[in-house]
Length: 391
Image 1 (cartoon, rainbow, N blue to C red):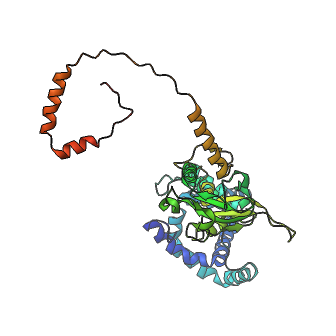
Image 2: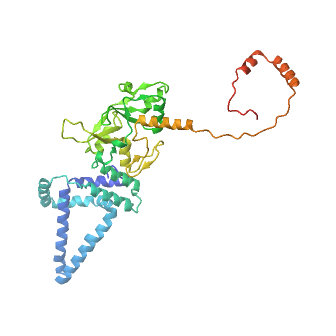
Image 3: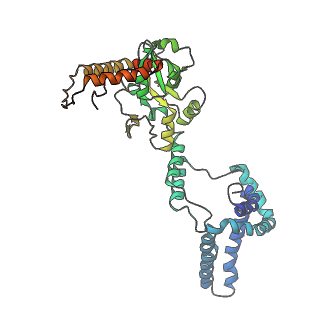
């Protein structure tokens, strides 16, 4: 409260904070004063009324004036009341320090001097839900959490508990490129249509990932040239592969992916045998972590469809290799070219008769008045085959 509240709350908190630093001394002093008042009240009342009335009056008085009313008022104005009555508490501690100070030191040795209120993750989630439902006070000093804030806070608490295995994208659903493939016009078109910013490159089988290709670095390539993908392995177009374990907490993975190494990690399964290479279970991107943190799907401009259950982009090109995609496109083009074109129905028009002699004399006079550049320009003009012959 000394740093997060408003000006008045910070002022109140600074007055109460010195008392709370010695909470055992404060606790023993208040309990001693309260016990002395409760025990002495029946004794004094016994001299005025009968013992039965003395007990009844003392119990009712303690219940109303020491329990119900103080707790009801301090629940709303506890900080202001505590700051206002703090000088009285200092006087009370000074009066009872002969008894309370030794007891407080014993408690400090046994229980420790620093005892704050700590909540488990599940308890803190419930506390956040309570602030979202009825956390708005009537004096307008505080606003409740929105549902989006509650969702993000609770998902942040789960990031340390959840592991990479919980949000993994299976390796069978990952689009990859073979290192023996080439980059040409068809390949670049496929990469453009898929829209992935990072594409794994494998050699031999899909478990042998050698590097990750950054598709934005391919913008400067000539699409009419054939470039082997193997030639890009040592260039700036690729990034090193990041391997993580399936039991890695998501918070640790977030620190791993936010650095300059890359935003794509491969999850390897645990193997007990050193002779067998670990199998790749799948991938996790920085976008997957953001979706887990926000508890919402981030839909890009290039996404075709989104499966809300497993957060996977539903596309046929995702599981296929780049060779299969290009082969499919070539088959589609061949099918389009072999499909017979439908016959066109042409409309018949009547053209008026032209006087040949008059037409010849007109063009002769016109051509004699034209300059040579105009003639050259007219001779080099191309005719559009698709333009109609008669307008």
